[in-house]
Amino acid sequence: MNEKEIAEIRRRFRGDKSNINHIRGCYVNEKREIISQFDQALSMMPQEETENMLGVLKRTLSGTLGKNLIDISFATQQVVDSDEHRLLMALRDSALKEEEMVQVFFQRVIETLALEGNYLILLAYDTYDIPFRSRDGETQKDASSEVYSYILCSICPVKMTKPMLSYDVPQNTFHNRDVDWIVAPPELGFLFPAFDDRSANIYNALYYSRNIEENHQEFVDTVFRTELPMPAAVQKETFQGLLAETLEEDCSLDVVQAVNEQLCSMMEEHKANKEEEPLVISRGTVKRVLESCGVAEEHVAAFEEKYESEFGAETELRPVNLVEKQFEVRTPDVTIQVNPERGDLIETRVIDGKRYILIHAEAGVEVNGVPVRILS
Image (cartoon, rainbow, N blue to C red):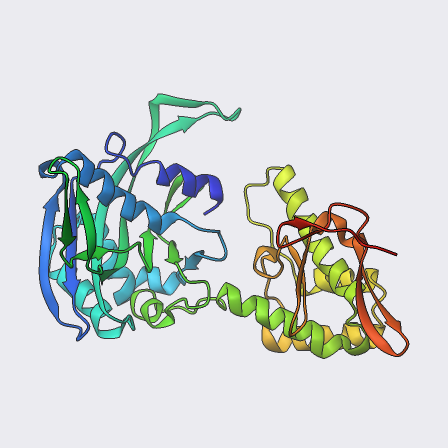
């Protein structure tokens, strides 16, 4: 799925747009015991609570594509004959009304998910009468191309509030607020089937993980039986480690800065061209970037070899996972953040045998918010 398709489905999660008429749920404690289950009709809930519930579900389609939102592909054999795909199809095709399948899903998640504390498993079913879109991009609301039916799963931690003092405006009095349990935003979840080319694709799902450092592979193994790519934070750490290890003396401020700038430039160009598909780069892309920075041939070759062993020779990565738009220089005691468009203001130099980071500062220098002067 691309960003436009995700946004189109996200807009469904409003009281006046959604066809979700009930939510299936399961409340699990820290001992992996089911405390309660519910089948909540949204029509029986106050409007504000309905909007809040839809808002929680909507968060499962939030974040950055490639970081928080990850495409999952099923092998053809899985779609033809596999227990995991059969279960997802049964949940979708029965509109969550086949009780046995719902219970099987709940039990599989509970038995394998490594999530601390209490949590909710929420399941929603929706049907979307997809408006026809002409070649020029115009949407015709009265003309439908097909009906997209899907399920959305959100797994939300349930956390205890702290006792505190509250103020009752009508009574003009203070009271201690009782400790209560609240539903936190989703930690993970998924959409099935995927909404690709504005149509249902039963060969794919869209997986969500709030934490880019932890993608809950154990959950994915159970529900999809497939391998996720490295978490985005691990991809970044691994990529940075490859540069430091393989470039050796070529791993200078200028080279690292140039790599960062070129990858950011690719992302800006991709955005300006309004490309729908996410930008990815290959091992060859990074090789060309390093060569353009003047990195020695043997160091480029070492990077290619290490890239293959860490990521895989044919693996494509999303630059949004590898670099930050904000350029940062850090020592054990000092951190310097630089406008990525003004990297020319910073340089490294050896003076009297000591290494320095120099920043060109003509005017507008402040220390803790206080304007200061630099005297000669």
